[in-house]
Length: 223
Image 1: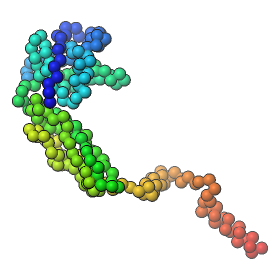
Image 2 (image 1 turned 180 degrees about the vertical axis):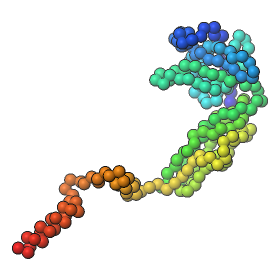
Image 3 (image 1 turned 45 degrees about the vertical axis):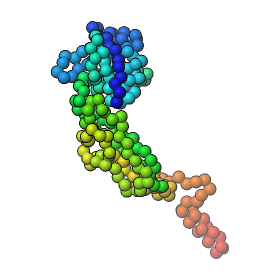
Image 4 (image 1 turned 45 degrees about the horizontal axis):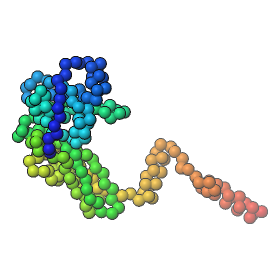
């Protein structure tokens, strides 16, 4: 993964008011920490940081007072409505150092016809060199039939990466697709369990109505 260079400024003001002023200036408050160093409070350029953090586990080369620090985003706080970045925690890393990160699972291909594909896990934890973190783990479901399962141990990780998750964790499950009749029967059973009466289409007789009608007809015939 290529490094993304960001030029930071040391931050001397703290608190909510200072953070709001930083954001109004299109900058992002952040902190650099790790490797036994004291936390370094900085501000990052807003637009460039937003673009850089669109990539998961982006490797950042943060320039602070002319000194470059390699770092990984550990926590990104975003505004729930505007989706702008509110604050970033950055972990200092070294070249050759191994780190544990969550990597996205990308499913490709089409399973066999009449199957239902359920992705149980969208990511897996792996250990990799800080400068060689995979962007994703690709898994193919092409032609797999109902009953097939893909576990974490089945994933083909990029060279240099090691699985940290439990090898038996289910990633993808492929089952037979239910027919419309089976779905309707299942729904009717669930409604019956909670006491919901089935809906009778207009113009359709219930069993009681049909039985009553038959009795009346028989009585008229006997007269």
